[in-house]
Length: 144
Image (cartoon, rainbow, N blue to C red):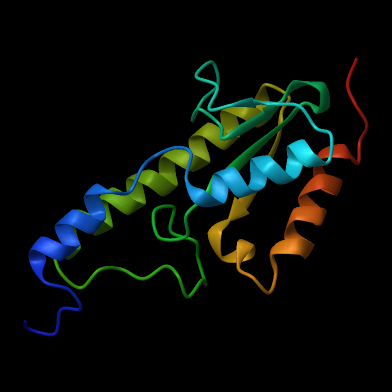
């Protein structure tokens, strides 16, 4: 194995198990918000990007992003793969550009857009980040 961490078949299987919604970090965020009394819609297809959490009462939208898939800049969890560099560079850059466009469209429609990153939900920082998320959502009060 020329410097690869996993055998090709193991890596292929692992990548095939990654899902686009209801990931562990998304479920963690939703459980926290629900326990704090917030009600929301999840993965609402009516909005650009099918946001992970839509809170109409607060006019806020939350995206829970994996650091690798959304190219979290300056994060240790994001690194460019060493194989198939052209493919991964193009794919991840498209993801980041699509995210920016979707956020812009949502803001133009009057929504507050909040990103929560996978690295912020690690054991050491999880409680503080979830509390800050709650404040970010509720700070301006509910809309009419």
